[in-house]
Length: 388
Image (cartoon, rainbow, N blue to C red):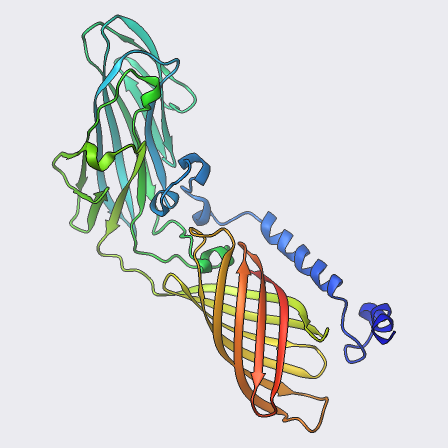
């Protein structure tokens, strides 16, 4: 009866007289999350990003982080012409703390009979693109194909040219990036990536088992690798054993003069929930990223009545590239200040804090357990969290 009465008092009641309704707190949290989710993401978080769907199932983390995807020559409808040679060329140079590349994909087609073909290609995440075969060309090869004539026994060279500009670092899938979409700083360093998709075998009679690639770097500050092979200014053949059945592979462009940022800004967080005793609990905190897997956070918890607790936690969290719902576990310390309540308990005491988190981008749920050895007291709470 007492609990029902406190619920009827609602938000107008005294915090000391009864807990705020958890339902109202949850609605407030969801409303704030909706505002953040509908706000436009910053340009650096969106520029050059490719969806996981566009890369197909089984895409590696390097491919998911790719800034551009080029290649994917295809004939519509399918033809009995062969792709007898396939080449990838790129001239790359450092640009600011990023990389700029002029990318060229070349295919040589051969047919035993005269025929006309319509050709498409992909150049996602590029700033300028052109597909050309003889006199025919298109500046939007993904949607506007070129029509080219193949003469029996005569090779036809098809070229896709594109400009790729990669900023200081495309946003990674670390927990700190997903939780703090608006304010998390770039990890830096690493290897910006271009995904190359080979000519689509299902649209041609045959495609080559090998591929030739070269990356001409205008500076010694840049290094390129693909499928474990170092790429340089001289043409390098990637053999059939390395290519296997891959339709796509990643070319990683590493800046050797830009180091990785170890300690990164995350952003503030707000939490609303309750303790297992049913008392309202609010939280205001801040998180930093330490490397790829570690988060460091400090938070102030209060019941707006008689307790204020300051806690610091070091948390290990899985990146979003592994799991869409990033779990994390952490441990740290908590310092409690009792403003009122039971006078027989210490007004101030230090203790241990353990936490477990399940977080989608921006929103999540965190469970905290605080133990204070001075008086043997413990507090367990579950809060919804909103990260900015």
